[in-house]
Image (cartoon, rainbow, N blue to C red):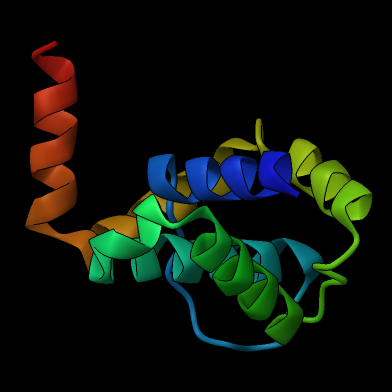
Length: 114
């Protein structure tokens, strides 16, 4: 389950998509859920340090969007399916940027200066 959470959180943090809790296409729901999880971490940085809390949050959010988030294999396949989709990556990035604002900008600046 940790691989799934790390993949989802990584995808969410790097890409980010902020959308409402609608039941659209699988792609739209994946983006919305990824953004919601990523934004939850930016809203509560302590969450990132607690792998179990991140795991629980991701399962709860992805379940709300109609995914069987307790099926680790299915979620890994889903993540792999979308991790190289430029449209999804851009949407997630824009979504997380909206909720993370200056915190994300500073993090990206710090990373660029390494």
